[in-house]
Length: 550
Image 1: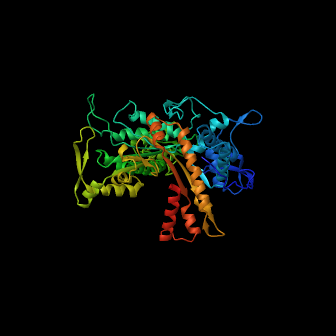
Image 2 (image 1 turned 90 degrees about the horizontal axis):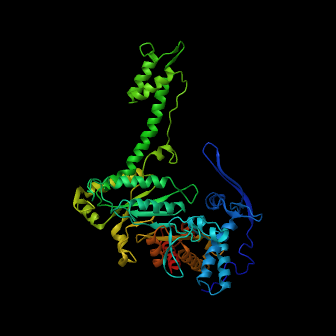
Image 3 (image 1 turned 60 degrees about the horizontal axis):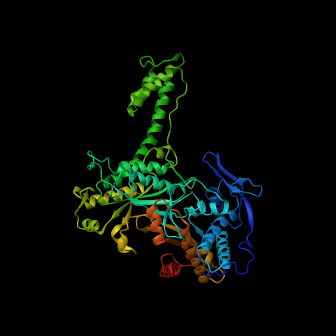
């Protein structure tokens, strides 16, 4: 392809005119304790401190970066990150014939670096985490079980190492079979999810094929049910920090509305939230009551745990029993006091989602959604009953009034923000590749809905950067140029990527799903003086989207 200079047309380099400055980035806990600090972060002076912190705390490589003295350290300059990403995309593009010649490749590199430095565009997080580590620094490691399609031969291969083929995709949809330990089964899915979370990606799966609690197993006995497996996956996700940073694992769990365990799934987070409330309130009450019991044991005359001789202790124990504190807990406090222990320790929980109370309960590491068909809405409209069906034989496991189930969904979402709704019939009516199978699930944020075992890489164009205040015009030419180049970035990313399973590697290579989008639409419309929901705003949005997707 022929690449022209646009943003860098009259510049000697991609960074001409950009003033870089050194800043400090720091993370403090609520108690003032510093948990992260970097003094030498180099960024353009136009960047906000938030942008600086995200780059330093999330995207800089922490180790393995060689310096002039032959030592290794971490990244500290945004230009290092821009070079490893833009250089990697350019290198793969040159190797596989994306450019007419070296001049076009050089123009491509400079234009991408310019857009990154000026915040005109940005790729998804896994690109910042992983892309170019091998290309720029030679960073590598043992293979992690990924696969890729060799662009030279079109053949599926197992990755030989960790970073030569990076994992630049953010969004994955994975299938799961009603199988415990074989490939594509439940336990295999947790391994595939771990491969994704480790490199900062997110994944979604529809679990409706998994048999419900009590359904028969082929070897005899009965299944422990879907919810027991979802809790395992939830704990596994919670143990992983994505991209080697403090970012949480991103996970979507979808379930069809006719699954026999749908009611438990709908109420899952509601019940877990109630457990958190019980832990928080209970810990405070227990600590207060047991502290009174403990203090009452220490009299002026000495330690006295006989309630017939210690009226204060008798009152404290009576008060503790009144709020249902177990006698065993009270007995332990009396034993500690008898041994002369002047302090007792009892944990007090709070509702901070990062603290122990939420870490104790399940269901906190995924977004949950129910897949609702038009058939259900017809039952709802006509006040009919809805059938829940066993997965092994399709027999009716239970019938429930549609309005009752709908009310449970509404109540649960109001209470805990989950589950979300995915309109299964409409989604599949809009499907662009229906001959290849149904759309069953989405990625965690639901901007990607496509076939099972596929992946999508993302990038966003910052619309406000194309608005010209002086003329009150949107720079269409610059926007079209940026769309063209970033489509190339995402296409090259498909070429160079590795994937967590063979199926995803093959499907992504075949379908080449790309996720180019835009950000700051609201800011653009406000800057142009267009009311957000007005006909003019809708027309502007339609025009921008048409240019982007065209």
